[in-house]
Image (cartoon, rainbow, N blue to C red; front, top):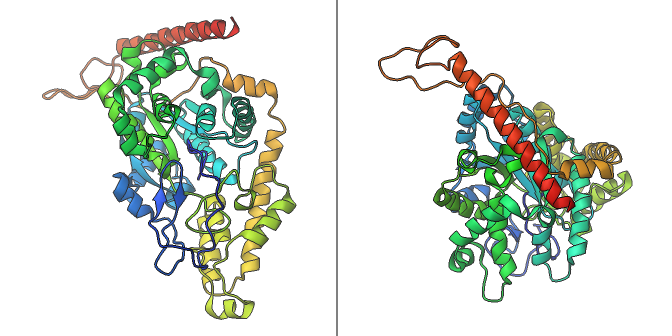
Length: 482
C-alpha cells in the first residue's frame, strides 16, 4: 500500500508473472526504494513474506489480543484492514491505546511522495485507513507531501514539477474525505522553517553518515540531500514541529507522541526516528504497518506511479479499469474454464481477489467468493468482473468528490492554522491511586479521581494552549505573506 511516506521506486517494469521463470534466484528486497519478492531456484517470483519482515525489522504482529483491546478501548469494530491482517504489524500501538483510554493527546502522521499528477488505488488505501483512524480517535492528522524528497531522489524531475505534483496530490488526498478542522497537509518546500527546521537540525545532528549508510544503504556516490532527508521525515514525527497545532511550550508538547500508519518498507526511517526521539527526550512515534497492494502483474511487487500498466489510477475511466483488470491482472485460475471447474483456482495469488480483500467490506461475502473460486464454482472471468465492479464504483465516488475540491479547499487544508479535535469522549482521566487510599467519586476530593478544581485547571490550560497556538499561527501567516 503506497502513499506510505513512500520513497521513489526505481522506474523498472513491475514484477513478472510469478509462473514465468525469472533470470536469477534472489532474496526478497523491501526497503524505502525497492520492493520485490524472492526469486526461487525455479526462477519464479514469490509473494512478499511479511512474517520474515517482522522478524528482520523487529516489529510486532498485530494479534487477536490487541485487536480485542482496540475494540474495547475505542468502542469500534476493527477496520477490515486490521481484521484481514492487511495492517499486520506495529510498534508501541499499546502506548497510543493507553493515551486514548486516559484522554491524553496524540496525533496521526502519514505522508505522500508526489511523483505523478494522480495517485493510484495503492496510494489511497493508507489514506482511507487514516481517515478511519482519525474518525475513531478524533485526533489531529498531519500529512507530509515530500516534494523535496522526490526532487532529491530523481535524476530527471525539477523542483517546479514536484511542487506541481504536490498540489495535484493534495487535491487527491482531500477527496478521501478528511475533516479540514483537524487535518493539516503541508509541502516540505512550503512549510520548512521555524519550529520544523529546528527539529530537522536537532535530528540531523544525532545521525552520522555511517548510521545513514548502514540503515539505508547510501554510499559515497549518494548526494547529501538524500542523506539529509532522513532528518526531515523524522522531524515530522515530533509534536513540537507544529506549534500552531499543539502550542509553543516545547517542554509540554515534547511528550505528545504520534501514530504513523505506513507501509512496512518505511519502517527503517522511523526506527532511526525512535532512537533520536529518545535522545532528544521527545515522545517516540508509534507505528502501524500495512502490506502492499500488489501490482496488477501479481505477487512479489507493488504498484508503481511511473508504470501505467501496473496500477489502477484514480483518474482512470471505467473502461480503462475494466481493460486493465482483464488484460493485466494476474490470475490464480486454471488455463481453461473446464479445468477451473474441475480443480478450482488459488485466490491467495489471484490479483482480483487480493484487491477485493482491500475494497470489499463484508467478511462473509469475501470468504464465500474465495471459497467458490477454490472449488471451481467461480471462474476467473467472473471473479474479475466482481473486482471491476467494486473498483469502478470506488474510483467513480472518488472522482465525484475530487471534482468539488477547489483551489480554495486546497489552500484551506495547507494553511497554517489551529486545529480542533475532541479526543476520547469517554476518557476518565484517572489519576493513579496512592497506596493506602481509596478512589473518590469524580468531583470529590481524593487521590483516585480529578477534583472539580483540577478539571477547571486542565480546561484553563487547554484554553491558554489554544490561544498560544492561534498566536503562533498568526505569526507564521504574517511571515508567509511578508
